[in-house]
Image 1: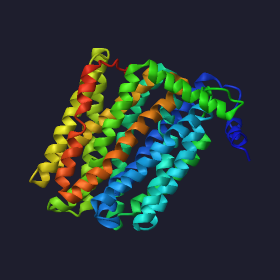
Image 2: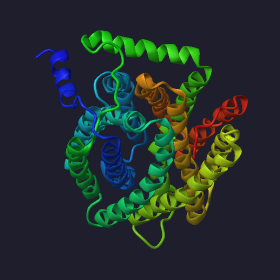
Image 3: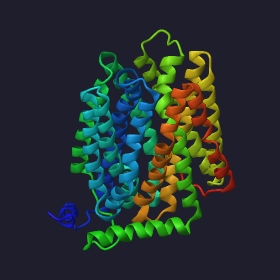
Image 4: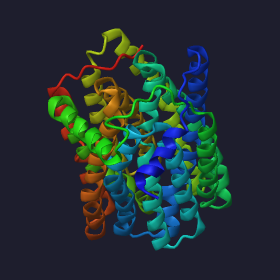
Length: 425
């Protein structure tokens, strides 16, 4: 079967006639809120125990841990643009469905055995699934409900997602006390079920394919060309891609090495590690909800003029919190500043996504978002092995210090360019 024939089958699943707007809006909102309730829940189950699972069961070697992160980001780097083009040229709904099917399969493969090479392969599989999903839900929402209604929903959905994430953390912590791999397996099954459910309830009437629908390769090329034209024309978008690269350099080391740092450099009191990891993730989630609401109201009051300043202060707070976490001599102090830094980082993400959607035309929106994640992945691929090697040669603290300080350049970028904020009303 030719690729164009296969992709055409996705288009035929979209009805030609639009339903009444009220019915369409209800269906779109129902699908969106289902997605925002379930997706963060199952992802948080994996996230709560993954770093602990890798560091305590799969391998304790910092370089190998960094390589696990590199494999995941390599999948993002290779597949982000092709899958973003699929979402822009053929179907955002089916990009999400296919992505979650692959994503869930990667989780299941990861949970089957602690063998390092199997886990390494699973990172590649679920990374491919992630690239199908990244950017597509936000672009789909704007298409179905319009920009004015969709942009506030992005932040509202993030708040709903934080509540769902908190529930997922609790569930993962309970399951993790039985077996640290169990939340990953359950999360994989739930992710596959989510994909099937979205395939049934998710409408797609507002989508307009980029390029020419009758010729697959021409459609893909047209979408990519339009995306590159937007990046060339809009200096702010180019800056955002560079920000993605800088952030990737920083988080590539921090995310791979913070778990072994906790396990090796602190005496963990009272509870077993899986419970403490659940507490830390839970605190970050709970703190993120009111902070996100405060940011939203602040931006409304200033009509968006302070967006760049907020992002710069968040970046500074993240750097300082990470440094205190790395060098703290007391576990409780380290836990507090870890939660602070991760809260600032969490709140930054939806603001970023809202800004991209506000400034990017619909027909290339998913592809531009994919380019941001691709630059982020490139930064992680380039830096993670370096941080892992430094940890082996010197110490985890030295490597984590370098990773934390490498985020600092984004502060200058934010302050040098007063980005217009999205309409957060």
